[in-house]
Length: 381
Ligand SMILES: C[S@@+](CC[C@H](N)C(=O)[O-])C[C@H]1O[C@@H](n2cnc3c(N)ncnc32)[C@H](O)[C@@H]1O
Image (cartoon, rainbow, N blue to C red; front, side):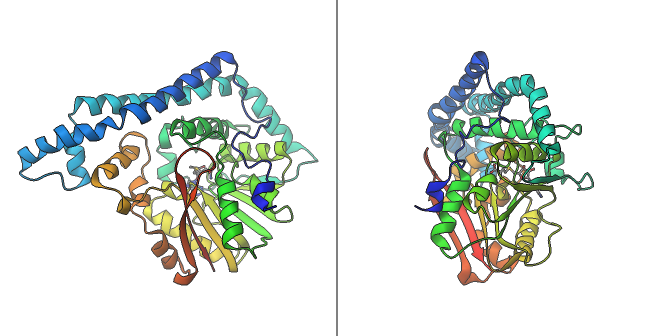
């Protein structure tokens, strides 16, 4: 049996004591948010293209003497269209309703979650570790912006027991994914581990690091997949990591969580056999995207593997209107770096970081359930 088929916890529905338990009414509220998002995404948002082609583009051409030629032209053409205005406003409202919905059970459960996390930090039987570093500077694109309207953002870390950022990230993230039609069980880690097994059959990593690990959902499966390996997860957010550590301990896996900037880690050169990330790169500025890849090249051993999984959206493969729809993320969903990532040439970026061209792979991998795929860009040093 392959490693990925043996994994028990690489499932997004994997239960554990750090998950807030929603009661009947809270679940109904979450279900409402989910239904609203799915209805907008499946039924109403597609109508924007018809509005563009039949109304907005002809009106733009009449006014300017040429059809919309850039995404800025598309934005200009669409901004006064009432249907587009209404659907966009509802999409933003649905995103806020989603966070409010998961926030109700988390707020009610927060004292229990903080206590459970505190106990796991103090336990003599803990398997992994947590190292927070208040001196790590918060980049402006995290500290000043609540990415995808996540309340108080990834940086939330109000006191020494704070686990709110992680709790919101895990519960909200699960609902968020289902709201864009990704299935209940989809697992980024399982997708990545399946890719690694197939692409690098000789890989037997002893040291593994997951960059931008958030709540640790994609980190812990690496400790299950390679039980003899030392697994580390790093993130910029302290509250995020406190939750991730408690979650990993509750699941019974040894993972070391540390607060660090992914562009500047404390690890020596050639330290890791495997460096991974999941959904990190679409949230980095151009400078940090380049910096993170250079850091990956520095900390991975010769023969070791660097592999990043992220959104399968590339502007080079999209028409102008799809690119404009992608930019909705920046315009209305507080995703400041969307365009940097969607314009990225993944293979060229890995090559600039130092990897040999013939050792670079970029591929799409189908999701476990739900439509679509993840994009993986990887290289062996
Ligand atoms: C979209 S989340 C990724 C979640 C997680 N890997 C998963 O798939 O479940 C991005 C995470 O990267 C972290 N992050 C963003 N920029 C970072 C940086 N420069 N250094 C370290 N962490 C960073 C954020 O705090 C956030 O938790």
